[in-house]
Structures are given as structure tokens and as C-alpha cells.
Length: 360
Image 1 (cartoon, rainbow, N blue to C red):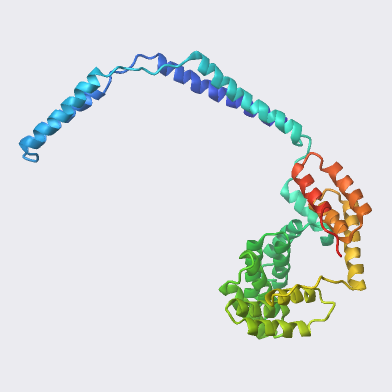
Image 2: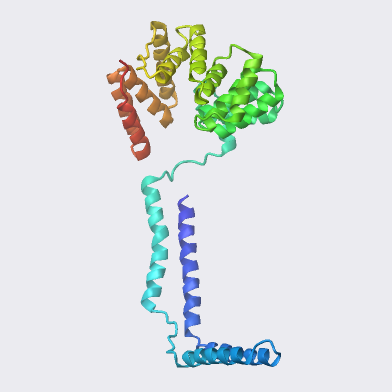
């Protein structure tokens, strides 16, 4: 990598020297005669020719002749200011061209990672394919699934998993593309239509497009109990002006959801918001808290084995903050800050995660 930067600097300096030398040679050549008088004399001749052919009246000819004559006299009397090249300016430009790659190289050596080995995508893909999917990041899992679906283009289930992975990797356009393919392969599966509708809502930043509503309608045709589809169809009624009808559907849906369903609290808050009431704070049962702590513990263990995951550290610090476990939060924050000390953007995310409000 260092050789690349040295070669780039030498080539930049050589190119600058060549340009400056050619410019100096052009400046040293005697100037060509000023073409302006020749141009106006030709214009006078053309005016006379048009008048002789009857295309211009005598009054117009005299007026145009006089204007062209005035411009010819002005051009002949104008002071010539030949272009010159100052030696000091030439040296300054050459010095700047040499300094730019040298400065870039210095910054790279200070902030970059010149000793890091090459990481070809094919080699990384092989490693990801051999890794437990639970230990992969969302983007890595999406890459593996994209390769798998390319090898098995008629596997609707593979495209469903790819939809979920692309969504988790915050790539909604790819999630929508995968969901459309899944629906095309298995149009009778309600969960695929629902996944398509969800992906479209995320892609449109929460808005309900006509295509999303169509996907949700297709979902409930095949599964009248589909929670997400029913929620968004009722939401569409509320946004269309039928607030009472939409709220009635939400309340009916709420009555069907078990109290420990993770969507229960979100639906309670949505109903309270539309009714203008204060939403009750979310509550977790003992089983839910045990599950959450188990997930956080699993994340901490994974980071001990594979610590090179900046977003994983951010999630861990935030999770400890939300759980109110300050000692674990501070320990994780200290370890992460030491690992990513040269990456200010990661440090900023870690500090923000450490300030997350704990659950009441």
C-alpha cells in the first residue's frame, strides 16, 4: 500500500511538471497576430456582399458598415496584454502538486491501517459460509443468503430469509426485491405477502403505499389472523378519515393478542396515541426479562470470541444502559473505546449508547 502512495505521488509530480513545461514553452513562443482586425474586415466584406445580392437595404448596409467599422477601429487601438508565466507561480504550483500526495500519505499512515492484509470478498464469503449464522452480522448474513438464492433461484424460503436479512441490514430496497421474488415463487403463502408489505413500508419510511396495502390485503385473504397486515390495514382506515373504524379493528386485534406477545405493548401505545391519551409505560414479564438478559449475555459472549464488531459493541453498551447494569456498561464501554480509539465516529456512537435511559 505504501508503494502505491509513493508511485501515485511520483506520477502526480511528473504530470504536473509536464503540464508546466508545455505551458512555459507555449509562453516563450512569439505571439500570433491579433485575429480581431481580420475578423471585422471579413464582416465588412460580407455586409457589402449581402447588399449587392439585395438581401440588405442601403440604410441597413450603412448602419451595419458603420458599426463594424467602429469595432475595427476599437480593436486596432486596444492595448495588447500578452499572456505571461511567472516563474514563481510555476514553482508554487509544482510544490503544491508534490505536497498534496505527500500530505495524503502522512494522514493515511497516521489514521489508516497500512499493515492490514488484503480482504478479498471471495475469501470472506467462504469464511462467512462456514460460520454459525447466529454469529454473523446482518450484512454478512445477507451476503451469504444472496449467494445461496443465486444458486437456488426457485427457493421461496431462501428469498424470505433474504428479505429479513436485508431488512435487518438496513437495505430496504434489496429487502423489497427479495420479497417480490419470494411472492412470485409462492403466491399462496400469506407470510410472504406480509413480508413484502412490511418491506415496502420500511422502504417508504413508514408510509403506506398502494402496493403495500395490496400486499396486506393479499395477506389477509390467505390468513385472516395475520397481525401485521391487519394492523396496517386498520391504520390505513384511520389515515383515510375513518378513525372510529380503524380504532375498532385495532382494539379487536389487541383482544386477540396474548399479553406476553411483544407486539401487545406497541399496539396499546398506538391506540392511546390516536385516542389522545397518555400511553402506559411498557412492562415486561419475568420471562421476557429473562429472555432479554439471555440475548444480551449471548451478544457479550459473541463479542469475546469475535470482538471486531463495532456495531455489536454499540448494541451491547446500549443494552446494559437500558437494563440499568452500570458496571457491565462501563466495562463494555471501556473495552470498546480502547479497541476503536482511532475511529471517532464509533466512539461517538458508543458514548451515545452509554447515555441511553434505563427502563423504569
